[in-house]
Image (cartoon, rainbow, N blue to C red; front, side):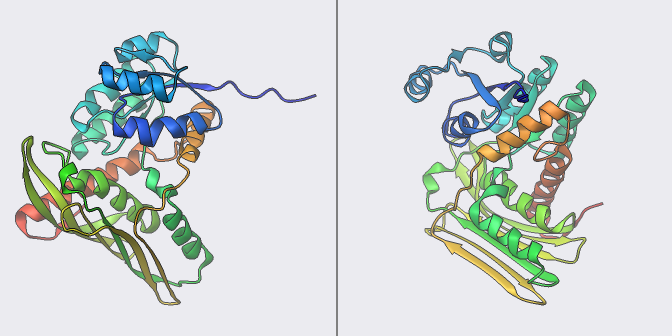
Length: 309
């Protein structure tokens, strides 16, 4: 007798800008165990684009309208300043959530979102999808093999030559964007951080102060030092990872990011919702990343190393 396949997770996307269209919708539709039910966007140009990209997927005006259409979960991929309100609204509607990064503007807000989901008994996942990038997966394989021995240093560089894409205002600089990913990658590999030193490349934008690059040094409790750098403004594009260990070294270089299959993240999220298990990225991991980003800003302002509790 054939076992019946579990029901599909009915998921909606809130926002259809670059993130929703490029980094979420294609991977949701490709993920095992998920049905894309609808997209929330009121912008007519984005509705037209959605109709062209996914003719069978309807657009909704509000998150509440989408919830009434019968969804189990939503992805929140609107601009960072809107994310807190929408995550809390989704939780109030009884929906599981995938929150795009940056998860929250600061660690206090991140803790509030985690607590709200916990109290409601809902799964809250954070889209640190670059754990699935090809170069990062190769690095993980090298570390898991033990061939590098005890790791001493990790270098992670991600440069983009597109200064015109810097967005100003709270939570919109490169630290919140790529910094979220690079800090998450370092902590995923080498564990909690005990001290942080960081410098930002400030930029003025029409929307307000922002940053176009950063240099960060993390000292992990494990003894590993991570050196993370990224820029949008220094006329260079490239991606590199290096690890130095007692037994060997690892290096990966490319002109651009080697994107992974992010549908795997969504398939794992569907499994977590179905089985009430941990999501691919737990809220606790995401809060830890935001805490480090807070410390980077504090370190830049003071010029001092910031020690974490």
